[in-house]
Amino acid sequence: MKTSHIAGRAASLLILPLIIVTAVLSACGGPAIADSLVKVRSGDAVASGIIVDSAGYVVTGGSILGGAGDLYVELKAEQGYTGRLICYDSARDLAVIKMEGNYPVLKPALLGDSDLLKQWDEVYTCGFKPGETGAATTKGSVTSLPRDEGISYLQTNAALDPSAAGSAVLNGTGEMVGMVSWNAGKIGHEGYALTSNEVKTVLTLAQEGEADPLAITSVDPPAVFSDRAVISWKTNRPATGQVEFGLKDSYGNSTALDTVLLTSHAAVLQGLVPKTTYYFRVLSVDCCDNAVASKGYSLITTAAGAQGGKFTISNIDVYDITSSAASVRWISNKPATGTIVYRIDKEAESDSETDKNFVYEHKFRLDGLRPETRYSVSVKSETDFDESAEQILPLFTTPPTSPVGCKINNRIFEFSFKTLQGGDFTNKDIAGKKVFIVFTKTTCPNCMRQALFLNDVYRDWPKGTDMLMFMVASSEKQKDVEEWIKKYGLVMPVYIDATADLVSGCQFRTIPTALFLDTGSVIRDYKSGGFGNKKDMEAAIKLFYETER
Image (tube, rainbow, N blue to C red; front, side, top):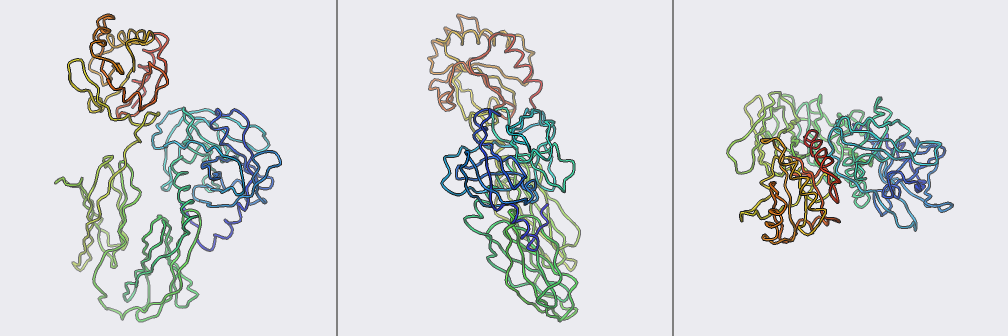
């Protein structure tokens, strides 16, 4: 959780004035990551780093550098480039660095979608340790996927320690799904890494912040009462919120730091004296520790016992939207209860939650939402004097559980195959099922062997399970497929992709190719060229069926 503000920003900006990056020449993790993995030096301190954008952006763990000295970039022997710190996210211990100068063409790491990771997925780390010239690799599995103070991590039994900060965590296909980080305030996180989606979020914000620096765009007239005042303001990018206030323009007091990164902000000044002048200014800090403060303002509290103005709610935000959840918050200008009602758009049935406490800030977390679904939400607050305010929010849509494509951890493209009976076999027919598909051609000798292997596995497989096994003949005429099935006595389903749209879209390098799909139609594994024998195919299908959720 971010705790820094303007007063603590100066020190953090001294951490990374320049960088040194030494390209990896080893085969750690294969050529893809070897071209992206770098060394980052600060005086005597050394950390790994990863090139994440060909425009010169590098990510690394920030605290291990410790501000020990100047940093500079070295991609080849005696070839140096200056660099500058774009972002240091102290909560995530993540530094984003921008290389400068006429550096050569860079090859960034392929950032995977860490939301698709599951427990016991195989991962390995690749990076440098102090005193070592070559990159070191450790291998293990994902043991858990925890969230700590709103930040997502992956825990692994691969050997990690603080000196591994900045190392890449890769999945089985070589995609970067995490970065080893070390935050001195989080003891016991030796086996944890920041997920790649957290890295993507900070990288995007850092790049946006570079193009459009954080600014306070407006400060609304305060809602003033005898003993309190509600201050609202907006920033051009997501940031924290806090108000300094006091009887003098030197302030002396501050509200609690609101660490949720939003563009609409509000804070309540409490314990004020009636008919008294107070001075205040608002502060915001983005995830990169870039801070901004407004000019000074003043307000005069009302007389004791005054009812104040009309009861209102404001600063309503829907944020942290995932495929299955979303957060909603708003501010009331008087202590009030909070109720939220939400439903799938245009459906009659709804869910609701109520907080009966009389508070200014109202927060709700909506769980159990459906992916790729549009929701309508309304919020309402009521004071102890029967005053009420209600507002309907703009519709929001939850994102899909995974992207569509032909890579591992992608949902399979929409398809429509023809059955031998003249019907259609589509994505709807595999929904909720585990699937093993072999793409084949009737003229391919190896395809014939795969068909015989699968035919035996299919015939012996226990009936009534949620496992589907079938073959898809690409660019074939129905007559040829029927003759092929009859010739080899096939009993498992065979469908026809007459136009080979799916095979072409996936750009399969070889036929046959086998795909394993989970119950969400997400590709979890594949086998180019098929299997050498029935035993290997059957073992792979059984392992997939038993371990895939």
